[in-house]
Amino acid sequence: MLSLPTFMEQKIKFPLFPRFRMSPPSHTVAHSVPPHALTRLAREWLAEDTSNFDPAGVCVGSQEIEARLLCKTPHSVLAGSPFFTAVFTEVGCTVDWIYQEGAEIGPDAITLTAVVRGPARCLLLGERPALNCLARASGIATRCSQLQAMATVGGWHGEVAGTRKTTPGFRLVEKYAMLVGGVSMHRQDLSGMVMLKDNHVWASGSITQAVTAARSVCGFSSKIEVECRSAEEGREAARGGADIVMLDNFQPQELHVAARALKEEFPALLIEASGGVTLANLSMYFSPHVDIISLGCITQGCPVVDFSLKVQKPVAHSVLQD
Image (cartoon, rainbow, N blue to C red):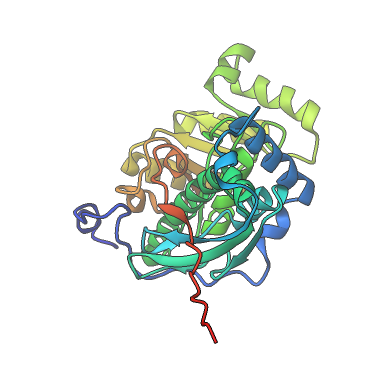
């Protein structure tokens, strides 16, 4: 097990975790994002940031310039490069990446990460939307990588997962960043999997009634998960046909007892732990009877990675007279 207090005492932006960064997958995660989605988001972000005039564009004109993308948060995981590139493509600029998506940047305090080239006013139009996306996505991927490293060191073979606690309008980027960081996205939206929470159960009358009604709509093609506050509720959900039981807001010891009892009675049932799980206490929830641990802190309150884009001053060439 890791010594968690040691992590929390580090005076750096991200807690210092052992160097157990997983190797980049053989497949390219960026290929999961359709090109039209990249274009749509880039256009939306640019329209939000510059809905009318750009008076500052008059100051710089359209001469070709070069800007360097600098990462100033060492040991960060790069995520969001397809979105960054899409923004600059939309304004007629090009991006040459020095680091690949999913790579760990550093250990230098400042690391050259990419070079952007294009017309000055266009490059500066794309600067802030592109940086905002990259900083947020890389922050999430870095946190996910840290969480997955803890699971690896702790010998736990379940899945660390995100939640739907995402920024409105930015979910695609945040879910994508989870993939880059090596954890599960969980469900992407309400249609991805049926999750019956306490409000669904109370509104429908019982867990059994809620599961039966949901199954009549989703059929065989979707899993049903039920949020449960006790092992007995978990049993009712499993008997009613639920595929996954979420043991919500359990203290670690209570979780281990309930999860073991449910697995012994329903071996095929998936058990998810959620509620109150953080970087500081994640290892306390590891159990051979728990298949999934979901954390809202993957997206809520997650630090961003500090990137900046610096335009390079033209080099003055002296003219030699004959």
